[in-house]
Image (cartoon, rainbow, N blue to C red; front, side):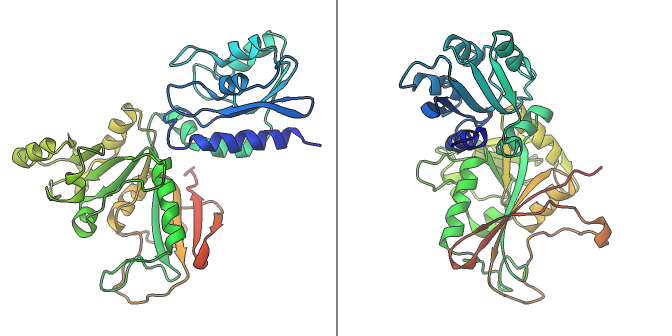
Length: 366
């Protein structure tokens, strides 16, 4: 006998299929159950397309009247890129709606549930609430503050090294763990590194997951140092790229723009680009999430500015040693353990070869 929790787990599983394509909309899945059977299901596939509830109702193999609809997020009740889902639910004759979490969007925020109840539909809220909330951490954050949800990613050995003393870093982790990084690049709307990473590694910063979506590439380059023959510049006509700078070099700026790059003129701060100004610019353009893959100084900068909400730490069962071998986070560092940035207990994923992924939420400073 399946329970409300089981059906909601199915809705969450469906919602995850939209990762990378719904931004800045939430991830939503919906399941229509009648007489203990699924008669229709769907998920929000892409921004601007039909929402999960309408897809599930359209997919129903029989009349949905009297059925229960399970959805991980409160149904929308306003006209946007698509019509309200509450209208479709009411018109279909659904008798009960089970909601995982409320929608913080001010255009919804309880109004969707109120409309359904006003129509005589039983609405139960909070089933699998923790899982539903975790699923849409990015959406909730963006709705609350209008700025990107920032995560950092790095791979290190068991002794905390991201490269050998020679600077060699390929490869710290195995193939399966590295393939998983592509899922992160697909999930987050933008990816950011500093100019040092471009100069040292000449990366592409694209998503190489089959069926994935390339993130917006953001390069922090205060002095416009990135080479015009770098992979970033060569592919800027194909992959949307932004360079954040505070340099007055109009000749280099014109050359970068000719390559298809958007060059931002931002204030400088602490020897680099003003990251808060950059976040405001990104948020205003509906960039709801940002994955920082830069070097140790870039990671230190976003952490010191209090921007980071999540850490993705890939941990390899290797030892490199060496006092000169770099660690993931540079900068001046914290003066005492009591001042350390606090993290949640990690979610742990295992990969072949013994690699681990430790995913931490950054605890709010009170």
